[in-house]
Figure 1 (tube, chains in turn purple, green):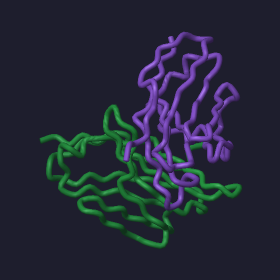
Figure 2 (figure 1 turned 90 degrees about the horizontal axis):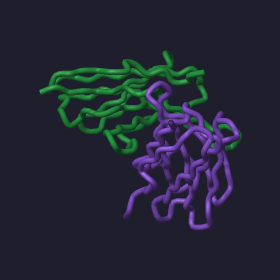
Figure 3 (figure 1 turned 120 degrees about the horizontal axis):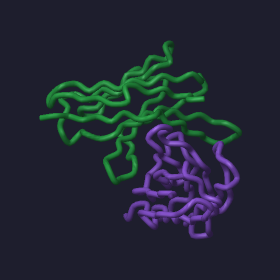
Length: 115
Length: 114
């Protein structure tokens, strides 16, 4: 079974621009979560989607948004990029909602650099 | 506010030695404690997990020790190997508003030297 895929793997943007990241979950998985990973803050939860609905949200500004499509693929958008948005953005999928006994399977991440 | 405190942030261990990573939590509502292993260029992968009704869980060379009263849990890697060199994250999850929420520790970069 193919794992979680994320595209693109690397992105370089400038301040003020916007970016869209894509995540394809493991086939059959309906939950997709997004995380921001930085050396100083570790893994920070952004949001979770299940059946095209945002079910859970972390403490990030409204510039960070996402959506999920009927095939469970998800996109994350960051508008008006700031230098501090430079990070590895990870997507994780699970059969149902995150946590509990449902293991989250992570993709390789998208490395975003904001100049 | 960091709800899961992880230490140390970096660790160097000789091959064959024991690697120990500690985590402490504050919220007693946490009810699931997984550990993740992340290699460079890869996403985190579940390594081992424990629930608070168990004090220890062992899988191969990896053991979680859990102290509910102290609100602490730790990962022990026995007979550490260079292939274990990776970043390790502890995590804790709970149900809030009807949904599970997962909080990660800041991570420990482990280097096992030959």
